[in-house]
Length: 435
Image (cartoon, rainbow, N blue to C red):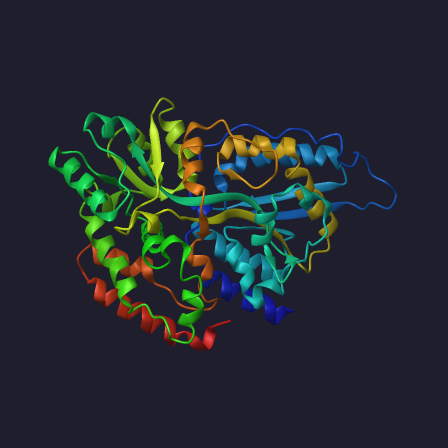
């Protein structure tokens, strides 16, 4: 198992390039509710021993909520002490690798269900199949956390790639929501001609470019959900990054970059939602997780949402690219599995989960949980048709440097053709590491 744990660390480092749905930063405050009446009563029996439940997470923005939840959980289960460590997303892979290697963790936060595809990762995780609390979840959400029928990942929130737009700016300038690529460019040109920044983009942290790539991919590579086997065919080189479709993705990304606000390269991603809410740009291509920051920055701000149209075929643009942006996994070697499952049951009770969802304002995964967020109500109609974000279909162990290359391209250092050639070479050269 030690060997597997070391491999797990390597897999995590490879996985860290993925768009993290839940990479978004939400402004949260408030606390958790007490355990529902159906929860196991508090108190310690003679058979119960003192337990220190060790939990690690990358969602530092949720710390206030989890501080309250952990206290409520400890009150309900006095024999369990929670040791909860949260670090920023950029530091999380290193922390997680170290803690898994030494076995010093019980419950592990994850930013994507795609991790369980890799065998080396699955071998380190407990199978949670049959846990009673899972009955509260939406069936489709649970399936995303399963591999060959076994439950390794517990999805806490759904996120989608979406384009937010300023309703007031669009109305004042007589603009309609674009449904095709040509309409999108026409809208951007009209805005630029009036001195209005068309697109807000925080380019200082390279990874946010992934969200634009993901939205272009959904209508160019897999239009209307077609070509579902595209990425499996890459393993045999039936499909390649040098194909015309991927060249189109990066060529259109280069075109869109001309409409970013001034000085985008120096703007932190975390600052972009608030600036967008202040009317500094007409659109923002992002993940749905940023809706909380937009609402917090300007509660009266009227925001709409649409799917970025990468194609001139409106039908091709009508499928949303989604993923589960935050979830939990249990260390297979944990000596405290029962306590970890109790914690998950407590956290995902309808009462506690409703409070969490009210704070983070993401799309829920548990039945009967609703949202009063006006922006979520704008995003929801875009999710009629969904498909997995392309990053969840990547080959485990494969090398994908698209964020780095795309950043170089929009800065003028390389061309779209250079990108697709580099990406194909990186991918094929990494074949010995494929899982």
